Length: 254
Length: 270
Image 1 (cartoon, rainbow over the protein chains, first blue to last red):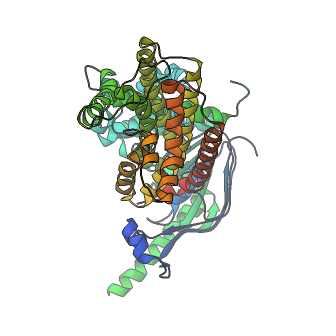
Image 2: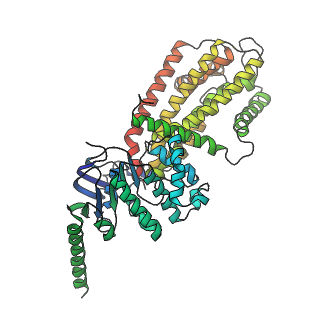
Image 3: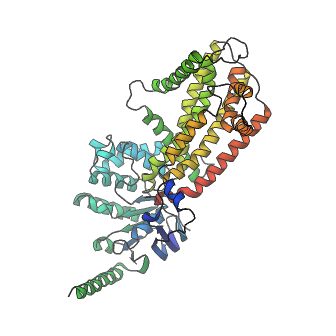
C-alpha cells in the first residue's frame, strides 16, 4: 500500500450503551451470574472504502450516521469490532475541539505533546514552532494554559499543528467551522495546498460547499455506506433523501 | 536513530515527554522545588523512628561494621523500595486517568503515560538512594554489595508497574478501584518488614499461612534484598533473588499483556 492510502474493509463498530455498564465494583459483583444486558449500538455496519493517496474524500450524512466514528477508526482511536482499517504514513487528525490538548499545559507545551504523539522529537517540533504560532495567530496566548483559551483559539492552534507538520493523511471533523470567516478561508486554502503536495484528506462536514471541493464523497446513513461517488451526485442524492424524509414527517403531522 | 522502528521511536519520545511532564508538574508552583521531594521521605523516616524507635524502643539490628545501628537508617533502606513500589501502583491509576480524555481524541500508545510516570518516580527514588548511600558512607558502612540495591529497585519497578498496569485499567472501568487499592496498600505496608525486623516474626507464634505470607511476599523479598545490599552488606540469598525475579517477571508480563489487550477500549469508557 502506498503511503497516504486508507483501506477500510468490511468494518463494523459496536458500542455498548453506557447505562448498561457497571461503573463500580459493587455493581459489577452484584451483576455477576446474571445474563449480560445486550443493549448495544452498531455505529457502523459493514463499511468498505478505499481512499487513494493524495485524494480528498468527504463524508456526509445526518447526525449520528457514523461519520465521526468512521473518522475515529481511521485515526486509530477505536478498534473496529469487525473488519479492518489500514492507514499508512503519518496521520494527523482534528476530531474535536482541542484534539489532543491537555488543559493544564500551555499552548506551546501542547504543541510539543501533539508532536510527540505524531512521532516528532522535541527538536523537530521546535523547528516548526515559529510557523505554527504564526499560522495560529494566537502568539500572545501561546504560553498560557490552554484551559483559558476560547473555542476559536483551540481550533486555531489545533489546526495550525495538524497542517504544519506535513501529514500524509489529514482527518478533519467539522472543527474548521468554528473559526471565523477569515480563519476558515485560511484553513481551506491550506488544505488545498496540502492536497496539492500529496496529502490525503478526509473530512466530515455538513457544508455542501466543502463537499463540492472533494474528489469523492461518501454518504453514510444509520451506519451504512449508502453511496460513494462524485460530489454532485452523492450530495444531491443525500439531499433528496433528506427532503423525502421531511415530507414523510410532514405527512405524519398533517 | 535509524535502527529503531518509527513506532518505537514515537513511544520513546512520548515516554520521555510524560516523564518530563510528571517531574515538572510535581513541584511546579513551589519555590523550594525538589527540596519537597526529599522532605517527604525524611519526615516519614523521622516519624516512624520516633514512634517505633523512641517510643516503642525498637532496636535496629547490627550493621556490617557495627557502627551504623540506627533504627532510622533501617527504616530508610526499607522505605526507599516501598515508596518506589506504592508510587507505581498508585501513580499508574492517576497517570492513566490523566490521559484518558486525551486518548479519546487522539491515538497514542497509552502505556507511554505509565512508563513516563514510572521513569519520573525512578529518578526520584534514585535521588533518595544517593542520599541513603551518602549517609551510609558517612558511617563508613558501605561495600561492594550496594550493587544489589539497583537490583532490588528493578524488582520493585517491574513488580509495581505490573500491578499498576492492571490496577489502572480496572480503575478506568470501575471508578472505585483506586479506593480499594489504597486500602490494600495500607495493609500491605505492615505485611513487609519496614517498621519491624523479620527476626521478630520468628519469635512469634504465628499461623503457618501468615508466616509464609509475611516472609515470602514479593515486596518483603525486595526489601530484604535492599537491606542486605546497604545495611548488612552481605550477598542476598540466591533463593530469594530467584523468587524475586519470578515474581517480577510474572507480574510485569501479565500486567503488560493485560494492559495491551484492554487499553484500546479506554477510548470507549464514558
